[in-house]
Image 1 (cartoon, rainbow, N blue to C red):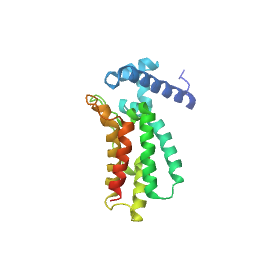
Image 2: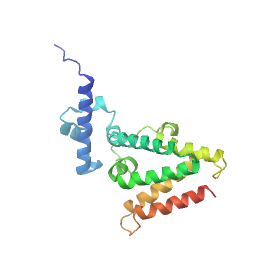
Image 3: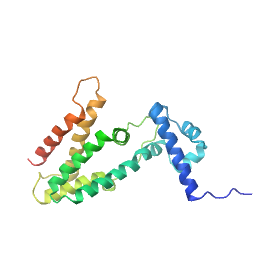
Image 4: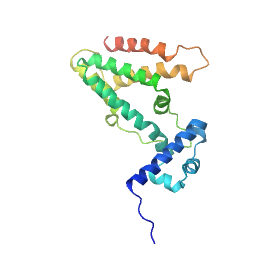
Length: 201
């Protein structure tokens, strides 16, 4: 007799169990020790079941941060809806990004400091238009350019430069911990000021 089909809730429960197992292993060992077999064993499912829910380990690990980051972007969208000046929108987004990185460090580290082990498949690259976070920044940049409030140039490149500057101020003290660099809490405000001065010069 064939096994009855799983309900949507049962499928979601299995997916949650797999993600929870992956998060537990990541917290204990980091990415280098994670394998499909270990995750499946921890979740109490077969490797085949794991791969019915996730195409590969990279997708599974990225799913741990996509949902919290999606909620964060919802908050970003709400915050800038009340800001009319596009330059102020850019500044507000930079502030919000910094607050997120500092206050929700574990999620930020997973989402933006993720270093893919060689054993994990490289994810397919998404178009910039498909990334809500990048689009929020770029839309503000384009709006400010249209009003002549900031420098001209490729808005994608300007947006990437803003993001790279913020990312560097946050990540450098963590990645180069052999040097007594200023922590992000001190470095980030100076970076935001420098980026805004550059953008408006």
